Amino acid sequence: MLNNLTLILPELILFLGAMGLLMIGAFSKNDPTRTVDLGAVAILALAAAAAGSYATDAPASAFDGAFIMDSFASLMKVLTFVATGIAILMSQSFLKLEKLARFEYAVLLLLAAAGMGMMISANDLISLYMGIELQSLALYVVAAINRDSLRSTEAGLKYFVLGALSSGMLLYGASLIYGFSGSTNFNEIAAAFQPQGGQLPMAQVLGLVFLLAGLAFKISAVPFHMWTPDVYEGAPTSVTAFFASAPKLAGMAIFLRIMMTGFENALVAWQQIIILLAAASMVLGAFAAIGQQNIKRLMAYSSIGHMGFALVGFAAASEAGVASVILYMALYVVMTLGTFACILSMRRDSGPVERIDDLSGLSQTRPFMAFCLAVMMFSLAGIPPMAGFFGKLFVFRAAIDAGLYSLSILGVLASVVGAYYYLRIVKIMYLDAPADEINEPMPRELSILAGVMTAFTLLFFIYPAPLVELADMASSVLVQSDLSLAAD
Image (cartoon, rainbow, N blue to C red; front, side):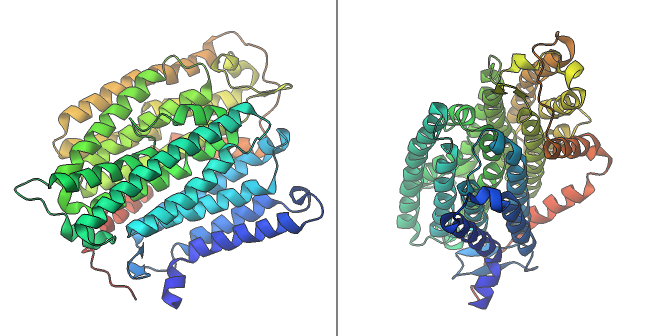
């Protein structure tokens, strides 16, 4: 039992932190947001959870193999918890200005982070579903946290309805997989799902398809993306920043885990599905964003496109492909949070602004903010020497090494099309006449975060080795593991 508790230490820390904040909020006679810096407490809990993710060095399992900790899980948990902490830090000034500072916000994000941690370490369909639902239920509520806003409540309702549908599909697929394999453990599923004559039986393919559909919803892959633009636009901007970062990391991590371990022998069945998801996501993300005027909605389609690029590396189904996905997701989160640091600063005296045209002439009124946003746009477009270019380079190289030439060419073309709407924002900021000035200066924490992420994006090419080596180490553990861990 002690070993089990050691392995779930990060999730225990987050859960206890959430319960502590909940007790403070429930029993405080005064407004707890004024007496306790709930955001700081939540960030400390996330930092402790990130440190606890390295409580064990060697791969180990707990709870009869339902929960696994290895280098892959440790790295993805650290990235997820750091992204969640940055999202909480970015939200502090926004929530106060919008009068949305409620103690439930920090509690919900900690619970969502605990769910994401469970997802990343899941080695069993039951623990996978528990993690997904713990994350999802918290996200449904936080999307609608602005109860006085029709857009926010509509976003929460749409997310809940479509999320419930995806959970049903995932459960149906899991039940079929259990019926065919006789187990919910990924290792035993891998032994049961063996191609016959080079193909899986159709009944097994059906269960795999439903499972993939439920997982694809979590990362907004086409055709399970329909919730993303409306939820991103309707939810408070600080919530959108969180949705676009940490949950995508956790969703991609469990996607990699379950396919590369539970269905490693069924590559012939699921690789074609991943290729289709990647191609559709890249194309829709590139073309659907062109006509968008709301920057949050544009970032939603951008997110869909970038999940497609990450899936290109996944489709390679190799150690290099998995490493490229990990690297791409890490860089994507940095670029996305840096962009949202600028979006959260788009304010006038009347409140936040979201239209892209409101950025006209920003280089003359807010030069630092314009510079940071321009760097992020160049990086998201994949223009060298920004970090985003190297992310795409690695996933395309992995795909080419795997013989996926058509998918790589389609990805390059989609990247060229997508560059149009990123560069359009830069053009509006630097070449158009100033619109009504965005009067509010960037809050200090947002300017610091934007500066740090801009520097990382600009200078990544000088010394990329540490992150590349971490991604290689995590991928080697995931791909080459003998998957025979016994519960202690």
